Image (cartoon, rainbow, N blue to C red):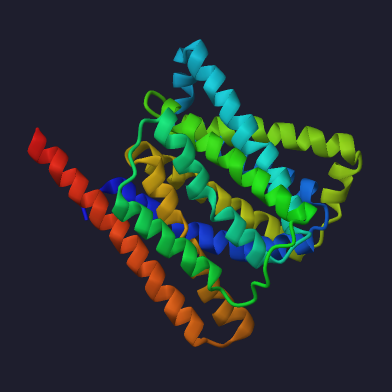
Length: 301
């Protein structure tokens, strides 16, 4: 497979599936969703800043234009601050399966925005693939329907904000290095979250100091997963259409379900096999369509 963007999108889906699995344990372990999210994102921000210093990419920040800086700030607020608080606050209130299904509607919101603002096109094959992937997600066992609770609405709001962020990021990635975009998203975004945490809970810092070893374990593990996720995601978004990479990301549920079957339920149901087949079919259609379009573009040249 030659399409590097698709390859990175598949890797992102795997990382996302693992991240969703461990984040549920983490948010249950560290009860304050805002404190957990802010602390985790601060750790990620430090990792990215260290990476920028090590690779000397920080120097390019000094050459950014005003419109690029504005877009990076928007990415930080819309993608790195508000939705994280909303998502993890919602996740602490509703079943993980409900949160996962709502979050997987991201591709729908991205498509609605990418078509008019990024001038991307969506083919019949892509619509079919997205339908198959989303249908496979709804098949997951344990889903008892939506209640339109505050938690579910928080997850939905976070998902729509992330869709807006993807469109803005796609534009800024044309001229700005992915690591710089990642640094802005997590650096500025985590600072906003941490300040919000201090305002709502002045004991945020002292609470972090009294975490037990297991809580620190979940905090560091989820931070590492998020660091890898955002780093790979922006590279995929830079190289492939937003609709395509977001659609591939829907398959992350398969990874989450496999991990749940192995480590939690210790059982594999026929439903998981059916879901897996549908997801593989959906992703295969997306890859086929992407490679087909790439070949057409090469022939046109």
